[in-house]
Length: 338
Image: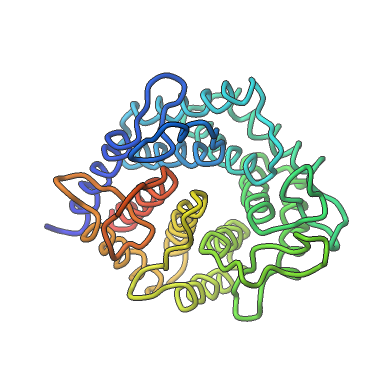
Protein backbone atom coordinates (compact mmCIF):
# COMPACT_ATOMS: atom_id res chain seq x y z
CA UNK A 1 0.00 0.00 0.00
CA UNK A 2 1.13 3.55 -0.66
CA UNK A 3 1.89 5.78 2.32
CA UNK A 4 -1.21 7.97 1.98
CA UNK A 5 -3.79 5.12 2.12
CA UNK A 6 -1.88 3.44 4.97
CA UNK A 7 -1.90 6.56 7.17
CA UNK A 8 -5.48 7.49 6.29
CA UNK A 9 -6.57 4.00 7.24
CA UNK A 10 -4.58 4.14 10.44
CA UNK A 11 -6.03 7.55 11.33
CA UNK A 12 -9.53 6.07 11.01
CA UNK A 13 -8.45 3.17 13.21
CA UNK A 14 -6.94 5.53 15.77
CA UNK A 15 -10.12 7.56 16.03
CA UNK A 16 -12.19 4.38 16.41
CA UNK A 17 -9.77 3.11 19.04
CA UNK A 18 -10.23 6.29 21.06
CA UNK A 19 -13.94 5.52 21.31
CA UNK A 20 -13.45 1.78 21.78
CA UNK A 21 -11.09 2.03 24.74
CA UNK A 22 -12.04 5.38 26.29
CA UNK A 23 -15.56 6.34 25.17
CA UNK A 24 -17.87 7.05 28.14
CA UNK A 25 -21.57 7.85 28.41
CA UNK A 26 -23.14 11.19 29.25
CA UNK A 27 -21.13 14.29 30.07
CA UNK A 28 -18.01 12.25 30.88
CA UNK A 29 -17.44 11.63 27.13
CA UNK A 30 -14.09 9.92 27.73
CA UNK A 31 -12.75 7.83 30.57
CA UNK A 32 -9.46 9.02 32.04
CA UNK A 33 -7.87 5.56 32.02
CA UNK A 34 -8.16 2.14 30.39
CA UNK A 35 -8.93 -0.21 31.94
CA UNK A 36 -11.08 1.88 34.25
CA UNK A 37 -11.04 1.42 38.01
CA UNK A 38 -13.19 3.02 40.73
CA UNK A 39 -12.26 6.66 41.21
CA UNK A 40 -10.40 6.98 37.90
CA UNK A 41 -12.93 9.48 36.56
CA UNK A 42 -13.02 11.65 39.67
CA UNK A 43 -10.57 14.14 38.14
CA UNK A 44 -11.89 16.55 35.51
CA UNK A 45 -9.02 16.78 33.02
CA UNK A 46 -9.94 20.08 31.35
CA UNK A 47 -6.79 20.27 29.28
CA UNK A 48 -6.85 16.64 28.13
CA UNK A 49 -10.32 17.26 26.76
CA UNK A 50 -9.15 20.37 24.91
CA UNK A 51 -6.72 18.09 23.06
CA UNK A 52 -9.54 15.62 22.42
CA UNK A 53 -11.25 18.51 20.60
CA UNK A 54 -8.10 18.96 18.53
CA UNK A 55 -7.98 15.24 17.73
CA UNK A 56 -11.56 15.27 16.45
CA UNK A 57 -10.84 18.40 14.42
CA UNK A 58 -7.88 16.60 12.87
CA UNK A 59 -10.29 13.89 11.78
CA UNK A 60 -12.68 16.45 10.34
CA UNK A 61 -9.96 18.26 8.38
CA UNK A 62 -8.82 14.94 6.92
CA UNK A 63 -12.23 13.54 5.99
CA UNK A 64 -14.77 16.41 5.99
CA UNK A 65 -17.01 14.08 7.99
CA UNK A 66 -19.42 16.31 9.97
CA UNK A 67 -19.58 13.73 12.76
CA UNK A 68 -16.08 14.74 13.83
CA UNK A 69 -17.13 18.37 13.90
CA UNK A 70 -20.16 17.59 16.03
CA UNK A 71 -18.00 15.56 18.41
CA UNK A 72 -15.58 18.47 18.79
CA UNK A 73 -18.48 20.80 19.60
CA UNK A 74 -19.80 18.31 22.16
CA UNK A 75 -16.41 18.19 23.86
CA UNK A 76 -16.22 22.00 23.96
CA UNK A 77 -19.70 22.26 25.47
CA UNK A 78 -18.91 19.41 27.88
CA UNK A 79 -15.79 21.15 29.16
CA UNK A 80 -17.78 24.28 29.86
CA UNK A 81 -20.62 22.36 31.51
CA UNK A 82 -18.27 20.39 33.75
CA UNK A 83 -16.45 23.62 34.59
CA UNK A 84 -19.58 25.13 36.13
CA UNK A 85 -20.56 26.99 32.96
CA UNK A 86 -17.30 28.96 32.88
CA UNK A 87 -14.48 29.00 30.36
CA UNK A 88 -11.95 29.95 33.01
CA UNK A 89 -10.03 27.93 35.57
CA UNK A 90 -6.92 28.36 37.72
CA UNK A 91 -4.42 27.31 35.05
CA UNK A 92 -3.46 29.67 32.26
CA UNK A 93 -2.01 26.90 30.11
CA UNK A 94 -5.27 24.93 30.36
CA UNK A 95 -7.23 27.93 29.16
CA UNK A 96 -4.88 28.47 26.24
CA UNK A 97 -5.18 24.84 25.11
CA UNK A 98 -8.95 25.30 25.10
CA UNK A 99 -8.68 28.62 23.27
CA UNK A 100 -6.52 27.12 20.52
CA UNK A 101 -8.93 24.22 19.98
CA UNK A 102 -11.94 26.53 20.16
CA UNK A 103 -10.50 28.86 17.53
CA UNK A 104 -9.99 25.87 15.23
CA UNK A 105 -13.58 24.83 15.85
CA UNK A 106 -14.78 28.37 15.14
CA UNK A 107 -12.87 28.34 11.84
CA UNK A 108 -14.44 25.03 10.87
CA UNK A 109 -18.01 25.98 11.80
CA UNK A 110 -18.12 29.76 11.36
CA UNK A 111 -19.77 29.97 14.78
CA UNK A 112 -19.45 33.50 16.19
CA UNK A 113 -19.97 32.32 19.77
CA UNK A 114 -16.94 30.02 19.51
CA UNK A 115 -14.79 32.76 18.09
CA UNK A 116 -15.92 34.97 20.96
CA UNK A 117 -14.92 32.26 23.45
CA UNK A 118 -11.40 32.15 22.02
CA UNK A 119 -11.07 35.94 22.25
CA UNK A 120 -12.41 36.01 25.81
CA UNK A 121 -9.89 33.39 26.85
CA UNK A 122 -7.06 35.38 25.25
CA UNK A 123 -8.13 38.57 27.03
CA UNK A 124 -8.51 36.78 30.36
CA UNK A 125 -5.05 35.21 30.16
CA UNK A 126 -3.42 38.50 29.20
CA UNK A 127 -5.19 40.46 31.94
CA UNK A 128 -4.61 37.99 34.75
CA UNK A 129 -1.57 36.00 33.58
CA UNK A 130 1.04 38.56 32.56
CA UNK A 131 3.09 40.08 35.37
CA UNK A 132 6.64 41.26 35.99
CA UNK A 133 7.92 38.33 38.03
CA UNK A 134 11.09 37.09 36.31
CA UNK A 135 10.97 40.04 33.94
CA UNK A 136 7.59 39.32 32.39
CA UNK A 137 5.79 36.38 30.83
CA UNK A 138 2.52 34.58 31.49
CA UNK A 139 2.16 32.78 34.82
CA UNK A 140 1.37 29.08 34.93
CA UNK A 141 -1.59 29.47 37.29
CA UNK A 142 -3.50 32.09 39.25
CA UNK A 143 -2.23 30.92 42.63
CA UNK A 144 1.43 30.94 41.53
CA UNK A 145 1.94 34.28 39.76
CA UNK A 146 5.70 34.04 40.30
CA UNK A 147 6.08 30.78 38.33
CA UNK A 148 6.46 31.13 34.56
CA UNK A 149 6.74 28.28 32.08
CA UNK A 150 6.79 27.40 28.41
CA UNK A 151 3.37 25.63 28.47
CA UNK A 152 1.72 28.93 29.40
CA UNK A 153 3.76 31.27 27.22
CA UNK A 154 4.26 29.49 23.90
CA UNK A 155 0.53 28.71 23.42
CA UNK A 156 -0.19 32.38 24.09
CA UNK A 157 2.17 33.29 21.23
CA UNK A 158 0.46 30.80 18.92
CA UNK A 159 -3.03 32.01 19.82
CA UNK A 160 -2.06 35.68 19.54
CA UNK A 161 -0.50 35.19 16.10
CA UNK A 162 -3.57 33.34 14.85
CA UNK A 163 -5.92 36.02 16.17
CA UNK A 164 -3.78 38.64 14.45
CA UNK A 165 -4.07 36.72 11.20
CA UNK A 166 -7.86 36.56 11.63
CA UNK A 167 -8.38 40.20 12.47
CA UNK A 168 -5.37 42.24 11.44
CA UNK A 169 -5.54 43.86 14.88
CA UNK A 170 -1.94 44.87 15.72
CA UNK A 171 -2.39 44.35 19.47
CA UNK A 172 -2.42 40.58 18.96
CA UNK A 173 0.90 40.62 17.14
CA UNK A 174 2.39 43.07 19.65
CA UNK A 175 1.54 40.73 22.52
CA UNK A 176 2.78 37.68 20.62
CA UNK A 177 6.16 39.31 20.05
CA UNK A 178 6.40 40.58 23.63
CA UNK A 179 5.79 37.12 25.09
CA UNK A 180 8.04 35.44 22.52
CA UNK A 181 10.85 37.82 23.44
CA UNK A 182 10.48 36.89 27.10
CA UNK A 183 10.36 33.17 26.32
CA UNK A 184 13.47 33.24 24.16
CA UNK A 185 15.44 35.34 26.63
CA UNK A 186 14.48 33.16 29.58
CA UNK A 187 13.96 29.53 28.60
CA UNK A 188 15.47 28.84 25.15
CA UNK A 189 19.08 27.66 25.00
CA UNK A 190 21.48 28.59 22.16
CA UNK A 191 21.09 25.09 20.69
CA UNK A 192 17.32 25.55 20.64
CA UNK A 193 16.48 23.33 23.60
CA UNK A 194 13.52 24.76 25.50
CA UNK A 195 13.33 24.51 29.28
CA UNK A 196 10.04 23.97 31.06
CA UNK A 197 9.91 26.87 33.53
CA UNK A 198 11.51 29.25 35.98
CA UNK A 199 10.99 30.26 39.63
CA UNK A 200 8.65 27.39 40.50
CA UNK A 201 9.99 27.38 44.06
CA UNK A 202 10.49 31.17 44.22
CA UNK A 203 14.25 30.74 43.90
CA UNK A 204 14.68 32.13 40.34
CA UNK A 205 15.94 28.71 39.25
CA UNK A 206 15.20 27.15 35.86
CA UNK A 207 13.90 23.57 35.99
CA UNK A 208 16.70 22.18 33.84
CA UNK A 209 15.82 18.58 34.72
CA UNK A 210 12.27 18.86 33.34
CA UNK A 211 13.08 17.91 29.74
CA UNK A 212 9.78 17.45 27.95
CA UNK A 213 8.85 17.09 24.30
CA UNK A 214 5.85 19.40 24.45
CA UNK A 215 8.00 22.39 25.37
CA UNK A 216 10.03 21.84 22.22
CA UNK A 217 6.91 21.40 20.11
CA UNK A 218 5.26 24.49 21.50
CA UNK A 219 8.24 26.68 20.73
CA UNK A 220 8.38 25.20 17.23
CA UNK A 221 4.71 26.08 16.80
CA UNK A 222 5.22 29.61 18.08
CA UNK A 223 8.09 30.14 15.63
CA UNK A 224 6.06 28.80 12.71
CA UNK A 225 3.18 31.15 13.55
CA UNK A 226 5.51 34.16 13.63
CA UNK A 227 6.70 33.51 10.11
CA UNK A 228 9.75 33.17 7.94
CA UNK A 229 12.19 35.01 10.19
CA UNK A 230 11.65 32.36 12.88
CA UNK A 231 11.69 29.18 10.78
CA UNK A 232 15.40 28.47 11.22
CA UNK A 233 14.88 28.64 15.00
CA UNK A 234 11.94 26.25 14.73
CA UNK A 235 13.98 23.75 12.70
CA UNK A 236 16.89 24.00 15.15
CA UNK A 237 14.65 23.20 18.13
CA UNK A 238 12.81 20.40 16.33
CA UNK A 239 16.11 18.70 15.49
CA UNK A 240 17.59 19.32 18.94
CA UNK A 241 14.53 17.72 20.55
CA UNK A 242 15.07 14.56 18.54
CA UNK A 243 18.76 14.47 19.42
CA UNK A 244 18.20 15.11 23.12
CA UNK A 245 14.94 13.32 23.91
CA UNK A 246 14.69 10.30 21.60
CA UNK A 247 16.11 6.82 21.94
CA UNK A 248 15.84 3.83 19.62
CA UNK A 249 13.85 5.83 17.09
CA UNK A 250 11.14 7.17 19.43
CA UNK A 251 10.82 9.76 22.14
CA UNK A 252 11.46 8.32 25.57
CA UNK A 253 8.62 7.62 27.98
CA UNK A 254 8.17 10.91 29.85
CA UNK A 255 6.42 9.66 32.99
CA UNK A 256 3.40 7.83 34.33
CA UNK A 257 1.53 10.60 36.16
CA UNK A 258 -1.00 11.02 33.37
CA UNK A 259 -0.31 14.51 32.03
CA UNK A 260 2.99 13.39 30.53
CA UNK A 261 1.12 11.18 28.08
CA UNK A 262 0.02 14.22 26.08
CA UNK A 263 3.47 15.72 25.67
CA UNK A 264 4.44 13.76 22.54
CA UNK A 265 1.25 14.65 20.72
CA UNK A 266 1.97 18.36 21.11
CA UNK A 267 5.41 17.94 19.54
CA UNK A 268 3.98 15.98 16.61
CA UNK A 269 1.28 18.57 15.94
CA UNK A 270 3.72 21.43 15.61
CA UNK A 271 6.44 19.39 13.91
CA UNK A 272 3.92 18.70 11.17
CA UNK A 273 3.23 22.43 10.85
CA UNK A 274 6.95 23.03 10.52
CA UNK A 275 7.53 20.48 7.76
CA UNK A 276 4.67 22.01 5.79
CA UNK A 277 6.56 25.31 5.47
CA UNK A 278 10.26 24.41 5.76
CA UNK A 279 12.67 21.82 4.38
CA UNK A 280 13.48 19.70 7.44
CA UNK A 281 13.63 16.11 6.15
CA UNK A 282 15.14 14.75 9.37
CA UNK A 283 12.12 15.92 11.36
CA UNK A 284 9.67 14.56 8.80
CA UNK A 285 11.43 11.19 8.76
CA UNK A 286 11.44 11.01 12.55
CA UNK A 287 7.72 11.80 12.81
CA UNK A 288 6.81 9.14 10.27
CA UNK A 289 9.33 6.56 11.48
CA UNK A 290 8.53 6.86 15.18
CA UNK A 291 4.78 6.72 14.56
CA UNK A 292 5.36 3.63 12.42
CA UNK A 293 7.07 2.06 15.45
CA UNK A 294 4.05 2.97 17.58
CA UNK A 295 1.74 1.10 15.22
CA UNK A 296 3.96 -1.95 14.96
CA UNK A 297 4.19 -2.16 18.75
CA UNK A 298 0.69 -1.19 19.87
CA UNK A 299 -1.81 -2.29 17.20
CA UNK A 300 -3.82 -5.40 17.97
CA UNK A 301 -6.79 -6.75 16.01
CA UNK A 302 -7.29 -3.52 14.10
CA UNK A 303 -7.22 -1.31 17.19
CA UNK A 304 -4.49 0.87 18.67
CA UNK A 305 -3.84 1.14 22.41
CA UNK A 306 -0.88 3.42 23.09
CA UNK A 307 2.03 3.08 25.45
CA UNK A 308 4.39 5.72 26.82
CA UNK A 309 7.23 3.88 25.10
CA UNK A 310 6.25 3.51 21.46
CA UNK A 311 8.64 0.60 20.96
CA UNK A 312 6.67 -1.64 23.33
CA UNK A 313 3.02 -2.64 23.76
CA UNK A 314 1.23 -1.31 26.81
CA UNK A 315 1.26 -3.19 30.09
CA UNK A 316 -1.19 -2.18 32.77
CA UNK A 317 -3.27 0.99 32.61
CA UNK A 318 -3.15 3.54 29.79
CA UNK A 319 -4.17 7.18 30.32
CA UNK A 320 -6.44 8.99 27.88
CA UNK A 321 -3.60 11.48 27.46
CA UNK A 322 -1.27 8.88 25.93
CA UNK A 323 -4.00 7.65 23.63
CA UNK A 324 -4.65 11.20 22.43
CA UNK A 325 -0.96 11.62 21.61
CA UNK A 326 -1.11 8.48 19.49
CA UNK A 327 -4.23 9.68 17.68
CA UNK A 328 -2.71 13.10 17.00
CA UNK A 329 0.61 11.69 15.80
CA UNK A 330 -1.23 9.36 13.41
CA UNK A 331 -3.38 12.19 12.10
CA UNK A 332 -0.24 14.27 11.55
CA UNK A 333 1.30 11.45 9.52
CA UNK A 334 -1.87 11.20 7.44
CA UNK A 335 -1.76 14.95 6.81
CA UNK A 336 1.94 14.90 5.91
CA UNK A 337 1.64 12.02 3.46
CA UNK A 338 -1.68 13.18 2.02
